[in-house]
Length: 260
Picture (tube, rainbow, N blue to C red):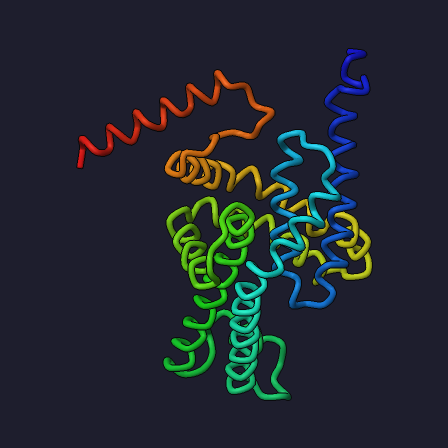
Protein backbone atom coordinates (compact mmCIF):
# COMPACT_ATOMS: atom_id res chain seq x y z
CA UNK A 1 0.00 0.00 0.00
CA UNK A 2 2.87 2.32 0.82
CA UNK A 3 4.24 1.89 -2.70
CA UNK A 4 1.30 3.80 -4.13
CA UNK A 5 2.52 7.01 -2.48
CA UNK A 6 6.22 6.50 -3.25
CA UNK A 7 8.08 9.12 -5.28
CA UNK A 8 7.94 6.79 -8.29
CA UNK A 9 4.46 5.51 -7.45
CA UNK A 10 1.37 5.90 -9.66
CA UNK A 11 -0.12 8.78 -7.67
CA UNK A 12 3.04 10.87 -7.71
CA UNK A 13 3.56 10.13 -11.41
CA UNK A 14 -0.03 11.19 -12.12
CA UNK A 15 0.45 14.43 -10.20
CA UNK A 16 3.71 15.12 -12.05
CA UNK A 17 1.98 14.54 -15.39
CA UNK A 18 -0.85 16.83 -14.31
CA UNK A 19 1.59 19.62 -13.48
CA UNK A 20 3.25 19.17 -16.87
CA UNK A 21 -0.17 19.44 -18.54
CA UNK A 22 -0.89 22.66 -16.63
CA UNK A 23 2.39 24.23 -17.79
CA UNK A 24 1.87 23.00 -21.36
CA UNK A 25 -1.63 24.46 -21.33
CA UNK A 26 -0.31 27.89 -20.30
CA UNK A 27 2.45 27.73 -22.92
CA UNK A 28 -0.05 26.78 -25.62
CA UNK A 29 -2.38 29.67 -24.70
CA UNK A 30 0.52 32.13 -24.83
CA UNK A 31 1.72 30.77 -28.18
CA UNK A 32 -1.83 30.92 -29.59
CA UNK A 33 -2.31 34.62 -28.75
CA UNK A 34 -1.09 35.89 -32.17
CA UNK A 35 -3.79 33.56 -33.64
CA UNK A 36 -1.82 32.72 -36.79
CA UNK A 37 0.66 30.75 -34.64
CA UNK A 38 -2.07 28.57 -33.09
CA UNK A 39 -1.45 25.74 -35.55
CA UNK A 40 2.21 25.47 -34.57
CA UNK A 41 1.30 25.73 -30.87
CA UNK A 42 -1.31 22.96 -30.99
CA UNK A 43 0.97 20.70 -33.05
CA UNK A 44 3.81 21.22 -30.57
CA UNK A 45 1.39 20.41 -27.74
CA UNK A 46 0.44 17.06 -29.25
CA UNK A 47 4.06 16.17 -30.00
CA UNK A 48 5.10 16.99 -26.43
CA UNK A 49 2.21 14.97 -25.00
CA UNK A 50 3.33 11.98 -27.09
CA UNK A 51 6.78 12.27 -25.53
CA UNK A 52 5.28 12.80 -22.05
CA UNK A 53 3.51 9.44 -22.31
CA UNK A 54 6.84 7.81 -23.19
CA UNK A 55 8.51 9.26 -20.11
CA UNK A 56 10.69 11.80 -21.88
CA UNK A 57 12.27 14.66 -19.94
CA UNK A 58 13.02 18.26 -20.93
CA UNK A 59 9.48 18.64 -22.24
CA UNK A 60 9.21 22.43 -22.00
CA UNK A 61 12.38 22.92 -24.03
CA UNK A 62 11.07 20.33 -26.48
CA UNK A 63 7.76 22.21 -26.75
CA UNK A 64 9.44 25.45 -27.82
CA UNK A 65 11.70 23.57 -30.23
CA UNK A 66 8.70 21.91 -31.90
CA UNK A 67 6.76 25.17 -31.88
CA UNK A 68 9.59 26.87 -33.77
CA UNK A 69 9.90 23.96 -36.22
CA UNK A 70 6.14 23.86 -36.88
CA UNK A 71 5.77 27.57 -37.60
CA UNK A 72 6.78 27.01 -41.21
CA UNK A 73 5.11 23.65 -41.76
CA UNK A 74 1.80 23.95 -39.87
CA UNK A 75 0.99 27.67 -40.09
CA UNK A 76 -0.28 27.43 -43.70
CA UNK A 77 -2.42 24.43 -42.71
CA UNK A 78 -3.87 26.35 -39.77
CA UNK A 79 -4.53 29.49 -41.84
CA UNK A 80 -6.54 27.47 -44.39
CA UNK A 81 -8.47 25.74 -41.61
CA UNK A 82 -9.07 29.05 -39.81
CA UNK A 83 -10.35 30.80 -42.94
CA UNK A 84 -12.69 27.93 -43.69
CA UNK A 85 -13.96 28.06 -40.10
CA UNK A 86 -14.60 31.81 -40.40
CA UNK A 87 -16.46 31.20 -43.66
CA UNK A 88 -18.67 28.56 -42.01
CA UNK A 89 -19.41 30.86 -39.06
CA UNK A 90 -20.31 33.77 -41.35
CA UNK A 91 -22.40 31.52 -43.57
CA UNK A 92 -24.30 30.19 -40.56
CA UNK A 93 -24.93 33.73 -39.33
CA UNK A 94 -26.43 34.68 -42.71
CA UNK A 95 -28.66 31.58 -42.80
CA UNK A 96 -29.74 32.18 -39.23
CA UNK A 97 -30.65 35.82 -39.88
CA UNK A 98 -32.59 34.80 -42.99
CA UNK A 99 -34.61 32.25 -41.00
CA UNK A 100 -35.21 34.15 -37.75
CA UNK A 101 -36.29 37.75 -37.40
CA UNK A 102 -34.88 40.03 -34.71
CA UNK A 103 -38.14 39.90 -32.74
CA UNK A 104 -38.69 36.14 -32.90
CA UNK A 105 -39.13 34.11 -29.74
CA UNK A 106 -36.55 31.71 -28.33
CA UNK A 107 -38.80 28.83 -29.42
CA UNK A 108 -38.62 29.99 -33.03
CA UNK A 109 -34.84 30.24 -32.79
CA UNK A 110 -34.67 26.71 -31.40
CA UNK A 111 -36.81 25.42 -34.26
CA UNK A 112 -34.35 26.87 -36.75
CA UNK A 113 -31.48 25.08 -35.01
CA UNK A 114 -33.42 21.79 -35.13
CA UNK A 115 -34.45 22.11 -38.81
CA UNK A 116 -38.11 22.64 -37.86
CA UNK A 117 -38.54 26.06 -39.39
CA UNK A 118 -38.23 27.61 -42.83
CA UNK A 119 -38.64 26.30 -46.35
CA UNK A 120 -37.28 22.98 -47.62
CA UNK A 121 -34.48 24.90 -49.31
CA UNK A 122 -33.48 26.54 -46.01
CA UNK A 123 -33.54 23.17 -44.25
CA UNK A 124 -31.27 21.77 -46.95
CA UNK A 125 -28.87 24.71 -46.64
CA UNK A 126 -28.76 24.29 -42.86
CA UNK A 127 -28.07 20.59 -43.34
CA UNK A 128 -25.11 21.40 -45.59
CA UNK A 129 -23.93 23.96 -43.04
CA UNK A 130 -23.96 21.47 -40.17
CA UNK A 131 -22.23 18.90 -42.34
CA UNK A 132 -19.53 21.44 -43.13
CA UNK A 133 -19.10 22.26 -39.43
CA UNK A 134 -18.87 18.56 -38.57
CA UNK A 135 -16.20 17.94 -41.22
CA UNK A 136 -14.26 21.03 -40.12
CA UNK A 137 -14.22 19.88 -36.52
CA UNK A 138 -13.36 16.30 -37.54
CA UNK A 139 -10.35 17.56 -39.51
CA UNK A 140 -9.40 19.85 -36.60
CA UNK A 141 -9.03 17.00 -34.09
CA UNK A 142 -6.82 14.96 -36.47
CA UNK A 143 -4.65 17.46 -38.32
CA UNK A 144 -2.46 18.52 -35.39
CA UNK A 145 -1.61 15.02 -34.09
CA UNK A 146 -0.90 14.04 -37.70
CA UNK A 147 1.22 17.15 -38.28
CA UNK A 148 3.18 16.39 -35.11
CA UNK A 149 4.65 13.27 -36.73
CA UNK A 150 4.55 13.97 -40.48
CA UNK A 151 5.82 16.95 -42.47
CA UNK A 152 3.65 17.72 -45.50
CA UNK A 153 2.11 20.57 -47.43
CA UNK A 154 -1.07 22.20 -46.14
CA UNK A 155 -3.08 20.43 -48.84
CA UNK A 156 -1.65 17.02 -47.88
CA UNK A 157 -2.14 17.67 -44.16
CA UNK A 158 -5.80 18.58 -44.58
CA UNK A 159 -6.45 15.78 -47.07
CA UNK A 160 -4.88 13.12 -44.86
CA UNK A 161 -6.64 14.48 -41.77
CA UNK A 162 -9.95 14.22 -43.64
CA UNK A 163 -9.18 10.61 -44.61
CA UNK A 164 -8.35 9.79 -40.99
CA UNK A 165 -11.46 11.57 -39.73
CA UNK A 166 -13.81 9.67 -42.03
CA UNK A 167 -11.92 6.37 -42.07
CA UNK A 168 -11.64 6.20 -38.27
CA UNK A 169 -15.06 7.65 -37.50
CA UNK A 170 -15.61 6.04 -34.04
CA UNK A 171 -12.23 7.41 -32.88
CA UNK A 172 -13.07 10.76 -34.47
CA UNK A 173 -16.35 11.02 -32.57
CA UNK A 174 -14.61 10.26 -29.27
CA UNK A 175 -11.91 12.84 -29.96
CA UNK A 176 -14.54 15.40 -30.89
CA UNK A 177 -16.40 14.63 -27.66
CA UNK A 178 -13.29 15.17 -25.51
CA UNK A 179 -12.42 18.36 -27.40
CA UNK A 180 -15.94 19.78 -27.09
CA UNK A 181 -16.42 19.20 -23.37
CA UNK A 182 -14.46 22.25 -22.21
CA UNK A 183 -16.00 24.71 -24.75
CA UNK A 184 -19.44 23.35 -23.80
CA UNK A 185 -18.91 24.07 -20.11
CA UNK A 186 -17.41 27.43 -21.04
CA UNK A 187 -20.69 28.33 -22.74
CA UNK A 188 -22.78 27.09 -19.82
CA UNK A 189 -20.82 28.81 -17.04
CA UNK A 190 -17.98 30.92 -18.43
CA UNK A 191 -16.79 32.58 -15.24
CA UNK A 192 -16.88 29.38 -13.19
CA UNK A 193 -15.05 27.26 -15.76
CA UNK A 194 -12.60 29.85 -17.08
CA UNK A 195 -9.90 29.09 -14.46
CA UNK A 196 -10.18 25.40 -15.42
CA UNK A 197 -9.75 26.33 -19.08
CA UNK A 198 -6.60 28.32 -18.30
CA UNK A 199 -5.08 25.43 -16.35
CA UNK A 200 -5.94 22.30 -18.36
CA UNK A 201 -8.67 23.29 -20.82
CA UNK A 202 -6.54 22.59 -23.90
CA UNK A 203 -3.87 20.16 -22.72
CA UNK A 204 -6.19 17.72 -20.91
CA UNK A 205 -8.49 17.09 -23.93
CA UNK A 206 -5.35 16.70 -26.08
CA UNK A 207 -3.93 14.24 -23.55
CA UNK A 208 -7.15 12.20 -23.55
CA UNK A 209 -7.28 12.25 -27.35
CA UNK A 210 -3.70 10.92 -27.49
CA UNK A 211 -4.93 7.58 -26.15
CA UNK A 212 -7.39 7.39 -29.04
CA UNK A 213 -5.22 8.47 -31.98
CA UNK A 214 -2.09 6.61 -30.79
CA UNK A 215 -3.48 3.36 -32.20
CA UNK A 216 -3.64 5.00 -35.63
CA UNK A 217 -0.70 7.43 -35.71
CA UNK A 218 1.90 5.08 -34.19
CA UNK A 219 1.45 2.32 -36.82
CA UNK A 220 1.61 4.96 -39.56
CA UNK A 221 4.90 6.26 -38.15
CA UNK A 222 6.24 2.71 -37.83
CA UNK A 223 5.34 1.94 -41.44
CA UNK A 224 6.94 5.18 -42.68
CA UNK A 225 10.14 4.47 -40.73
CA UNK A 226 10.25 0.93 -42.06
CA UNK A 227 9.95 2.17 -45.64
CA UNK A 228 12.71 4.71 -45.06
CA UNK A 229 14.99 2.23 -43.30
CA UNK A 230 14.96 4.24 -40.06
CA UNK A 231 14.87 2.84 -36.49
CA UNK A 232 11.31 1.94 -35.61
CA UNK A 233 11.47 3.03 -32.00
CA UNK A 234 12.96 5.81 -29.95
CA UNK A 235 16.51 5.32 -28.82
CA UNK A 236 15.49 4.48 -25.25
CA UNK A 237 13.64 1.36 -26.42
CA UNK A 238 15.46 -1.97 -26.34
CA UNK A 239 16.93 -3.36 -29.56
CA UNK A 240 15.33 -6.80 -29.13
CA UNK A 241 11.82 -5.35 -29.19
CA UNK A 242 12.67 -3.21 -32.20
CA UNK A 243 14.00 -6.26 -34.07
CA UNK A 244 10.81 -8.18 -33.31
CA UNK A 245 8.57 -5.31 -34.46
CA UNK A 246 10.57 -4.91 -37.65
CA UNK A 247 10.23 -8.63 -38.43
CA UNK A 248 6.48 -8.45 -37.74
CA UNK A 249 6.13 -5.43 -40.03
CA UNK A 250 8.11 -7.09 -42.83
CA UNK A 251 6.09 -10.29 -42.42
CA UNK A 252 2.85 -8.33 -42.64
CA UNK A 253 4.12 -6.57 -45.77
CA UNK A 254 4.97 -9.91 -47.42
CA UNK A 255 1.52 -11.30 -46.54
CA UNK A 256 -0.20 -8.27 -48.06
CA UNK A 257 1.87 -8.66 -51.24
CA UNK A 258 0.85 -12.33 -51.55
CA UNK A 259 -2.82 -11.47 -51.10
CA UNK A 260 -2.64 -8.79 -53.80
